[in-house]
Amino acid sequence: MTKPGAIRDWYVGLTAIGRVQASAILFLVASAAGRFFGLPREPTGLTLAVSLGLFTWAFLLWCRPYVCAIWASSLGKVALGVVHLIVLWFASAYALSVIAGATGLPPREFGLTVSALTFMLYVPVSLLFTGLALMVFVIVLQTVAIFQEHLYWRYVGLVVGAFALASGLVGVAQWGIGNERVFYPLARQIAYVSDFQPAPNYLGVAADEKIYALDNELVAVAVLRSNEVTFSVRSLPGR
Figure 1 (cartoon, rainbow, N blue to C red):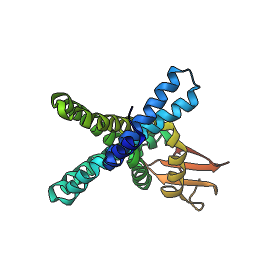
Figure 2 (figure 1 turned 30 degrees about the vertical axis):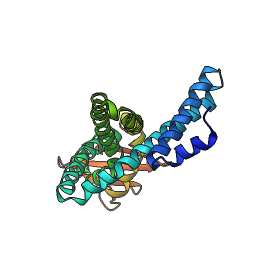
Figure 3 (figure 1 turned 45 degrees about the vertical axis):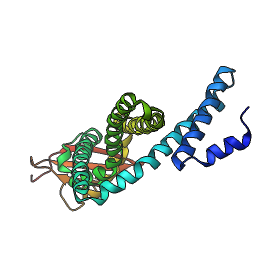
Figure 4 (figure 1 turned 45 degrees about the horizontal axis):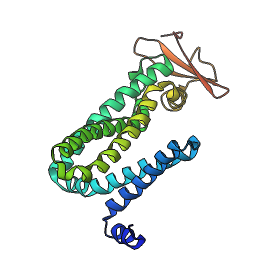
């Protein structure tokens, strides 16, 4: 029988990544045992979540030196800059879609609203790109582990951690992008505050209305009532 001291010495001799992975495996075994013995889902689900979290932590510890090395190189900075520009372009396109759905008006008319939403939507779009990149990395890492048998057990924990992190990031991003209507109230408020202006002295504009002149000699009108912004388009006298 293995002595407790031997187990302790083995654990102490592990690297930081190895200790985290060992703890993750312990929680994973506890979760599997709980399911096998019919324990309630809550505790077994919690142990599974902790296990995946620890696997993710180990993966982040492992990849941190490589990320720092990439960032330290000039080529790496250029590559990351290009990636950021691509993400920014997709975030801008998504912002245009949100504004069009929220206002029912051409989104390119609202420059300040597009800029503000692009900045805020950059996060979910970047999470999606990061998650997809990690998915590709998982496939590469798993392939290496399969063909390099002596490295298999060293990499299998990293694969689990990378996959857990990628799944989480993609899931959060998909929820944000798939539930576009969640951003509609925010987009309406930003457009009302930033792009629309009051014009009570303008003929045909009420005191509680704000307007934005469109390119086709029409004006978009925004009204705030009970914290709800509504938009309409009409022609004003003299235009």
